[in-house]
Image 1 (cartoon, rainbow, N blue to C red):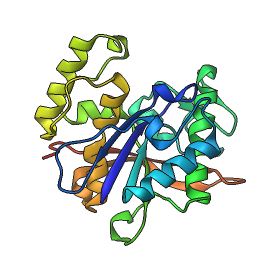
Image 2: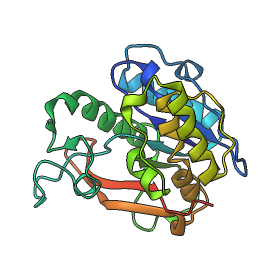
Image 3: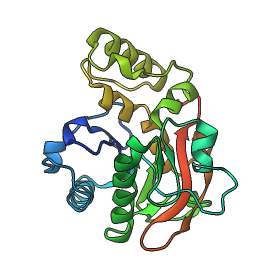
Length: 241
């Protein structure tokens, strides 16, 4: 199965990072938002339709999105955040519907959750659940957290402060290529590199190989409307190759 990883943003599509890997390949490609037909400002319905259309055209059966898939369950004993976010110490914390910490994350959080909802409810993508590897013919939709993926691959996290430092970005790209065996282009953006670092987790899902995958959290639970509570964050298990 071809897999796709997307480092999301809610303000402009130029801040999206996309990384794609075909079956048996070690050479990721990096499509642009324009290739998906996306034009600012980001809108959930348009974005979901474009992602699904692109996925169908490229025979993509696994998509990872860097952003929350659901809200914190109201009865969770963990305050202000989902279990997966507590375990991984994510910078943004997803609260009960309509709440996030810090509050500046709310627009991004809402965009991500609504995008997951649209891909599930309108286009039939399935969220990762216990026993996912036993199911056939499913198109899987997972939540990633690239910052944690770096450490699980035995590498230093890619810092946000080097977003425009080409030399530093190339260094991290080389390190990622060495660990994964991927043939990586020389000049990738920060967002593209963040999308690429979770490709080993997407590959594990495509190959139905739970030994190469770490899941953090618990199964997504139905919430009022079209959303879910909680959910798994999926990460690559070291070694990736």
